[in-house]
Length: 166
Image 1 (cartoon, rainbow, N blue to C red):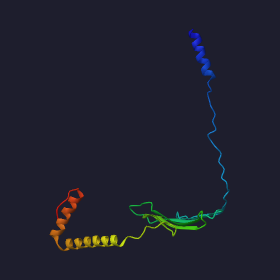
Image 2 (image 1 turned 135 degrees about the vertical axis):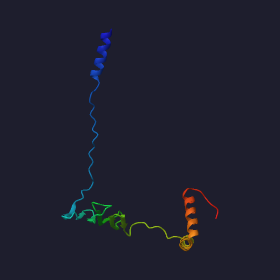
Image 3 (image 1 turned 135 degrees about the horizontal axis):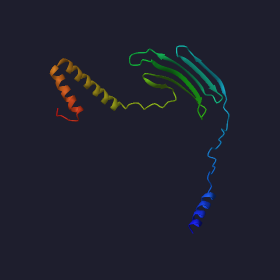
């Protein structure tokens, strides 16, 4: 009986497919071939570079980069990149973008980027009053050491999440 059970197990294991082959790699083709019309890269001995390319679907990109002065904070220097690109939007408009990337971050300029709405006059007036109040307090702290000391104490209370009565 045991022999029959063992033979049944071996037969079922032998009959189970060991390597199922599934074609997980689907082949995708693009609908349109887009040629590279122009490509130029120049590399300077000092690490600077300039790259330009243009594609058949009206994408144009130019970029240059160089290493800015090395310092104690940045012993290898700071990479500065400046460039521009343009492309045709689905509605036919040509979008143009200029950018700079350096120690101050990545900054973009383009007429096509959304801009925030103007600050309403009432809010602008409130911000002006806040700014003037800050300036008055700074001036008072300069002229009056006792006031400066009290301001420092109030600032510490604010920092600690404690509030005071004025």
